[in-house]
Amino acid sequence: MRYDLTDLQLFGAIAATGSLTQGAERVHLAPASASARIRRLEDAAGAPLFERRPRGVALTPAGEAMLRHARRVLSEVALLDAELGTFARGVAGVVRLFANTNAIGGSLPQDLAGFLAAQPQVDVLLEEHSSPAIVSAVVSGAADVGIVAGEVGGPELAFLPYRADRLVLICSPQHPFASRGRLNYADTLAENYVSLSADSAIHGFLLDRAREAGRRPRIRAQVRAFDAVCRMVSAGVGVAVVPHSAAAASSAAVPLAVVELNDAWGSREMKLCFRREQPLSPYQRELITHLTLISQSGRSGV
Image (cartoon, rainbow, N blue to C red; front, top):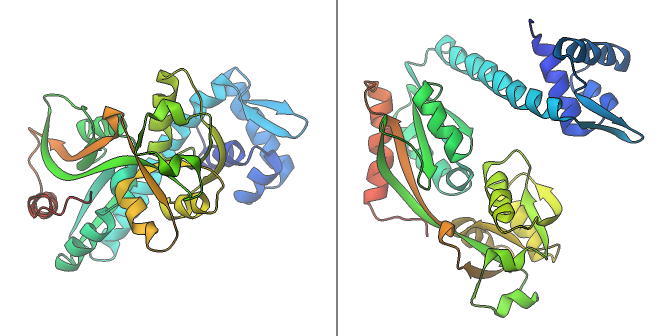
């Protein structure tokens, strides 16, 4: 079937709000029109996408699958608009950079600022994804350069070191964990947690680590940025796992206790990746060189 972009935007808005009425408001549609569009989507899918509840709606398994693909399609359309818009403004080149949450919440914005100041004729289109998704995007050509952590990738990709960081547990100075030198992540999962939003790469990563331990964190609050996580933790809402660089940046503004994690996956050696056999454009090569030189300078971000 043919998918209408407005239908996909509406579907994503309803999934995000858990309400047909609020989702319709987000995309500026009347509730009756929105309801008709969702019925058409469900008829085409041959399965219900939402479970109707007394206080809103929830995604069905078919809806979960639809949401994954809808997000990918809408992301590509937004990327298309952004990239074509740069040429309309007279920009000479564009680099599509996909990075994990750790990099985006850490030093990457500052590192990119230096590159963009030195290269005014180049735009960087930055998106946040999980490391496995970044590898797939670089392999397929959806991204030019990626920043990933962990053991990911294959022979079709080349890797260079970028920065190092580590995940740590943070809590308020009054919390019982504050006096602990080190902890296992699994031993913290009975606590109330503050987390980044569900669509962030690090949220999914930590949920996977909790599932491996046979647990699920009790998430009391979700926010959009690491500084907000740190402020809520400092206020005593719960504990959180964040990059050390994010904790260090926030500790100057709010009191925090930082506790090391014993888990090996807490070490985040971030790497640049790009296609091994694909010739790099001059702008892609300049960005990779810029970020690699930062790595070599010894500013690790730890």
